[in-house]
Amino acid sequence: MNHDDFEQRLQCQPPRQIPAEWREEILAMAGRGSRVEGRAQKRPRPSSLVSRLSTVLWPHPVAWAGLAAVWIFIFAVDLSTRDSTPVVVGNFSPPPAEVIVEVRQQQRLLAEMIGPRDVREADRYRSSAPRPRSELVEQLTT
Amino acid sequence: MRREPELGRLYDEHAQSLYAFLLNFTRDESDTRDLLQEIFIKLARHSELLEGARDERAFLIRLAHNAAIDLIRRRGTRERTSEKFATESIAPFMPASNPDEQAFRAGLAEALAELPPDQRAVVHLKLWEGLTFEQIASALNIPPNTAASRYRYGLDKLRDRLRPLYEEIK
Image 1 (cartoon, rainbow over the protein chains, first blue to last red):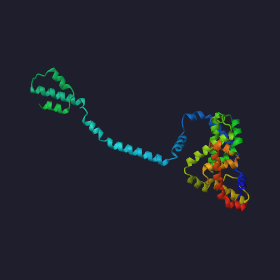
Image 2: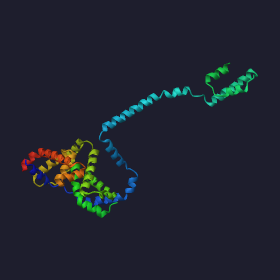
Image 3: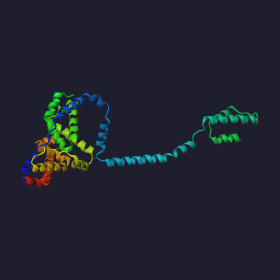
Image 4: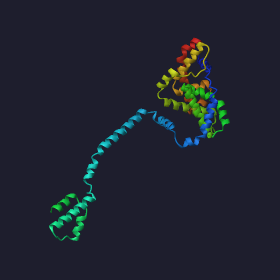
């Protein structure tokens, strides 16, 4: 098979002709497209966004899926290990203000029931400061 | 924004070439129409696009090539494209009245569809656009030697594939 003959043979094959009616339609669409350019450029259309994403992700879809799976795994592990943390923090949180006020009232009531007692101003201040619950209980029992 | 008479001139001078080039990639008339429309909308919106271009045809072919490659990527794997080609594709050549000639054109269309897109682009531009390797290189943004080698590989594959048909009608 002669090289040049074969090439010439291929070149003789006439390409299909473009449909004549396309001219008006395409030029009209192009004209309309250019008039709405401003609006279209302000907000990316979902189709173009999807198209861009597919262009970015297409070359290695398995790699992207793998990466996503790794992130999901990391997120899941993080969530499962986070559960114990609030309990530990909760043990060390100071008692709420209502509890302190209540304890103070009980102290006063107890003091009145026991009888007059010299309570120095400095002790009053000290007792009013927030303390660990164990200390308050000790104070109440003594 | 490009004026409509200028767009009309571009269409009259280049649309047929772009259509044939795109059809060779898509094998689907509505996809080809969409891509052609996309190109002309782009030209209408960005009048500056062609201002710096030395060769209008080469520049438009580059736009068409990029659009066709994007479409192929969107479609997915080449197997899916081949599958579509087998079922509902449109031939990129005019139908022939002679049955032997028609069989050769159908065989050529199939053989072209089996070429990798980069070889198919070069073969099309060389054979049916009559571009030189320098012009093809400029249009596809590749070195001229690469264009020449892709053409050689592509042509060899077509020759191997079409040898029986070619010998028959010769």
